[in-house]
Amino acid sequence: DGNVSEVVKSKAPNSSDDDEFSLEIMHGHLDRYGFATTDTGSDRLNMNAMSLARDRQTYWSRIETPSQRRQRVRLEDLRIQKWMNMLSKWDYEIGKKRKRFDRRVRKGIPDCFRDKVWPKLLKLHPLRDTLKGETYENLLLKANKSTETEVAHTRECISRDIGRTFPRHVVFHRRNGIGQRALTNVLRAYSMLDREVGYCQGMGFIVGLLLGYLTEENVFCLFQTCMLCEPWNMSELYKPGMPGSQLLLHQFETLLKIHIPDVAAHLDRELIVPSMYATQWFITVFTYNFPFDVVVRVWDVFLLEGWPIVFQVAIAIMKQNRKEILKRKFEHILEFFRGIPPSLNPQEIMELAVKIPITQAQLAAIRFPA
Image 1 (cartoon, rainbow, N blue to C red):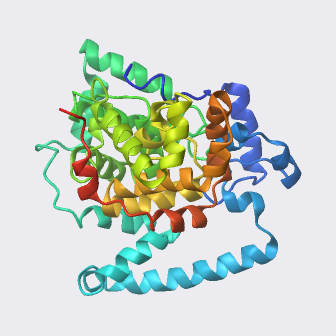
Image 2: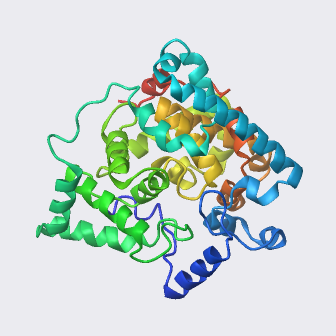
């Protein structure tokens, strides 16, 4: 697991933290995605950026007024009605009305339908069989029973990291609770399926996101598909030497020079490269410390289209913060990047992102010099 251990780190809760989180959850201080939040609006104003990121505060849970909330709920209700109709005639929507379907996915799948829609999105791609006759139950049994040194080491690494994955979430906060057990099971089973990758830090955040919507076995199916099949091929991110991560950062740097050349030149003068601030964005597809109302919107499109949306959002973040970046020097730029995630308005960032012309073909053309 040494490949990304320095990239994704967070503080694991201790028993007193468990008690604190349980108390918050009992008193109902949760956002709509199940993360324990701070108590009052004034408390939130006093929190620094990293505290907000750690608490996973959604944009709307921090700033919206009662009237804004009513408007948002009305829009969500209308979107739910549209998606109920779309789901009732799925084949027609993905066939005759595909452009409209894609547009609505980019606008955001209603949260109550993600458990149904996300697995369906994967089936829109030609997928290859990656299980090779294995079942989830068999892989998990092998992972738990194996006496191989390598497998035992992987089990130990997973167990050590589990408490660091979404420690303030209602499902994952309790040590050895149902959420942590499910997370452990999926990661162990996958480590037996893909022995080259095994387990790496960062994978837990992605599995944790999926467990918020799907059953344990369905999460495994979706996760292994994203890891091993086109157009995602996420296993490349975690292989020894992190070849996929290196390529994504190179592609991002190239696109930054195309779309925001003055920012790219400024960062170059300050000797700041993407690996210093954007690695977590890519290897966890924004799940590590971005607010969940941003994360799920990205994943709606990521499961439909693959990597272009990740680059579009990354470039949109840079565009939205262009002036702030240009007026800062080295250490203040890095500090500023650490504070970006909690400040993102999901609607604004996604509307800006989908207007940025980045395609799969364009990404395929950006490779390391021979």
